[in-house]
Image (cartoon, rainbow, N blue to C red; front, side, top):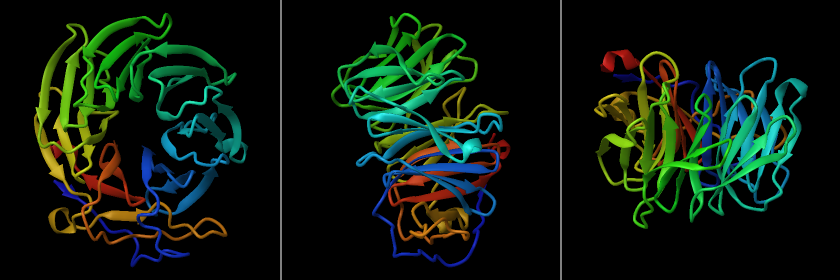
Length: 341
């Protein structure tokens, strides 16, 4: 079961209580490093052990909240790639946090991104997916996929295909080299928005979460649904598949609940409330925006939650689950996933 440990003491939010002012829209976890993005146009890097804020990267354009990001922990590249406003921002940590690329030019708001070694794909408000070259910063291809904004996408690099989910309720798979639509897995539905997508590790399965709380798994070889589950009708904002070891799927919803699933059968293994200390013990939870205006905080700001806070993003490691929330907070929960099976 989940076992969570409080890190630090009472909350000390310098410069006033920022809770509720900003959202922590996205997060990423790699080894002992956490990266988060907020509607205050800032990307922050955290130490997962101490919850100290190590670095900050600011988007300089106004009205450009950070909605999605990926983090390359490779010491050679050390890149942080973020979708903010209508552009993709790339920072190089090994060059003092310098912006190496600022990719855009189309004027459409971005909703999501997915990266490979050489490209970054973004979902746009005009229903298109755009692919940028990470080395030149140029847009190499535009894929016209949907009639409404592309709210989620993910790349299967070995098969050279891109899965896109939209606010029009559809899921499509495109060939990234030709732009051809090779499969339609969900037809457009005005009652359902596709909120999140992810490929299984073998590339044969695709997982999707929707605005009506439905979790689906497709077998791409048959273009058929392998299983689908619906625990409640709360918007399923994010899902993430464990990268190593067991193929455990974790989802986060607007009702503030994290669920752990067996990806092969669709069975729900456990439900966790990251903000409910009475159920799972105490949770490492701190304010993503609790940073003094004059610089970066050297002490963690741990919050004692007052209510169940909607989840916007979830990431799972080998023994930890990270969530970001609508009140600008992040929560880190320790869990032994092997014991759930």
